[in-house]
Length: 388
Image 1 (cartoon, rainbow, N blue to C red):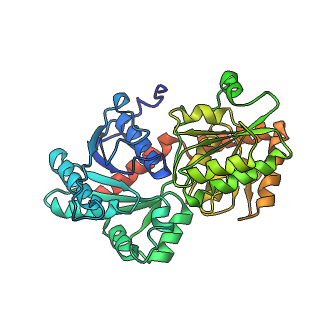
Image 2 (image 1 turned 90 degrees about the horizontal axis):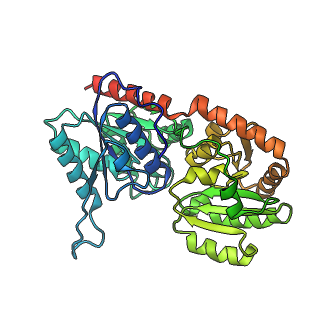
């Protein structure tokens, strides 16, 4: 892991913070873990609560305490009662460590579990903050089975943030919540996600005349990785290239089958979960992002930070992360031909790629660096605690 360049920037007053998240490579889990690491290195006492160690939590490099949620299966239950187990664990950590606040990432079921824990620990002044990340609102939360409990849990939080203005506006419109929603964007660790020159790694995946396209996702249907593979097959008709797919998920088997049908031998690499994502991004010429919807697009932001231009559909919060014509291209939703055209133009124009890559890096440095965004969270924490 790279040396942390901001160790000396300690906070004014240390807080005891619990963080609840999913352990996967999805954006909410990554942001929660990276935020916890940043807060810990700024002098706060941080406790991460999860059913598995998060993918980007490197305990030996931090002072973070990890608390495992044990979910007991019982024949009576068709599905393990994770929400109850999580609530019990949050309560236990509040009791043992006198947390000032619990920051839950992703409303379902984390906000509900945190509310239950707060009620059990009512003799503690612990506050609950919920960060909305996307599919917890866009997809799951709007399902009639979850809608009312999602609205209730959000409104029972002591503070709520969203990762984009798009997501905040959607939440207000769809759930009619009365609690204010503060927009605090996703962020990138600039020291980790940075442009790198690595010709040996590049040569491992592509010949000198070939371009490299990268995509990172959880392979869920909303990410439309099968469409990406078909797009790549069309791009190959005009530009010699290789496609590197990082991640795994429900659509993974279908994608493997599609590659057999559409892509020439050895043109597509499935890398599953990569520890050093930044190194792979740094050898890319283009990041292709055909998602049906994105609340923000953390993977695209990480690509920009590595100096890689992004081509994506103009959906959700992506216009808040990508500046069209400056750091990449935003194509109208479902305009497949437009996405192919934009990708080919960039892949065939090295000067334009370099200029966009440099502007993308500056854009992230100025608006989405981890130090500034961590300070925004600290300020919001103190605001919520002052209202107790």
